Length: 622
Image (cartoon, rainbow, N blue to C red; front, side, top):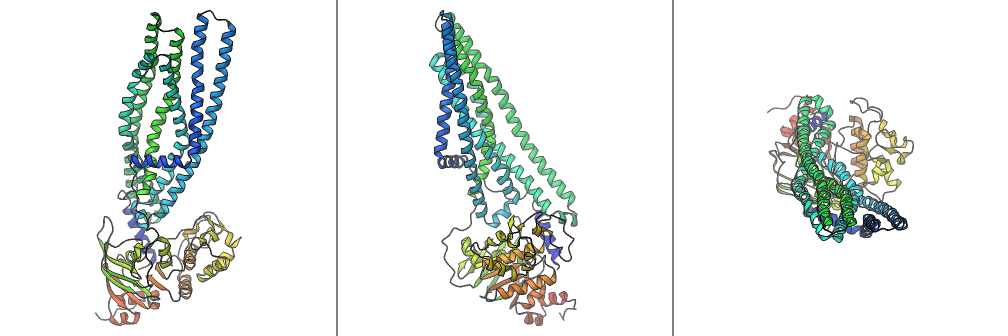
């Protein structure tokens, strides 16, 4: 089987199963979201307290104007002169200026609080994402993880920076204004509250439905992102297998589902905003009518009626802000629930797991089945001795890659056990696992940064001597030395290393293509393996993107560097099996043959047929 066919088939499988079957990551419950918000507030409690204090002072300063205006009206009706009016007007002006300065100060402190808190949210999200087991990410799909880390985190950031401070300011102002009406006249205050009671019922109706609606909208957005990313990543496979119409249909279905969820939330907003706009007029009208009747009977001064009406008129602005921001809070609250939900996902094993007694790997009675699929491994038994070179061969779909994932601790067997030194591989903490077993596939990633940065991921304490030794071991030292700044050359899209020469058998790469698309990315990944220095190395088509000559050189260089270590190679080029100490043959999820190359060829079984086919020779007698 050719490498290109294997790669395309794998990509095709991912594309065909990514339409709408991904298992999305969990979502936090409302109580968990409230607890997370309280934790973030406590982390910067001094700034939050300052925001509260400044908002309270600004709201208090804003109350003075209407009250003094009522005093002016009463003074004029009582025959007061211009001096009294001028004096009170000056106080109103000073209070307005104080309110402006205090409000701007509160907004400044609130924005700084929001930015610092957003930084904590982003850092926590990255930490949680990095702690997710690879199997969890694969089942959920990168689209969901990406949507949460971009759109949802951005929505949370907008809330912390803008919505939160404005909601806080407006809430304090609204409470002070309503309190001021009660101080002027409790009866008018009660009338105003009763006139605004309709807002409470509409708000309650809205809140009961908003969270579900926005969560559904977020999930639909994640599904769209997943389908788009899968289609873009496998564009060549889509064209090769004629999947264009299927991908277009899947995209349309996802977009239609997203449109329906957005129309649902739009309907909720339309009903909510309409009811709110009507509710603004009622309190002012009620107070004017009731206050006017009381004034006619001499039970209330005209200044008190005017002041109460002005307070309620002023209430419209903060109340409008509160209700508008409340709507945004529902949207961002759903986003926060999706971001915080990452904390509920399964984690990698914490530190403190027992240390393996030796380097022997034992596979006993292992069975495994993927979600939405049949059983892939069916009772596999295998022992890999320390320092052994084992090649795993077999037709496509035989279970070779699945076995490699179990050996590397990425997945956990459904039945049976995979142990290293007597300890289940999946129970090792990440640091132990990195030192014990490393899986290298043909899918590599080059991080934005320098060559040095990309290598230090594996061993942060490595010096230049160790870095060059690792590059030399995999045959990458020549092209790294040719880079403008050597180890300090920036890699990534458009960088010098991205202009690598095309790999034999592949189309020339476009200028600015990411370095991760070529053989140099594989060499960097293999250099990281050398630096990580594991006792067991699992190679799953790790040299698939290298031309045969470079692949052979790299494999021999690795073999020399990893002398004395265990190497398990998922082999499609059978020269790897020829060089191995033993060869394991997988067929239909079972281990059917195990032995040396010579003994298996002599046995004239499945391996012998593969070997003869590889060399274009007729197979032996049946």
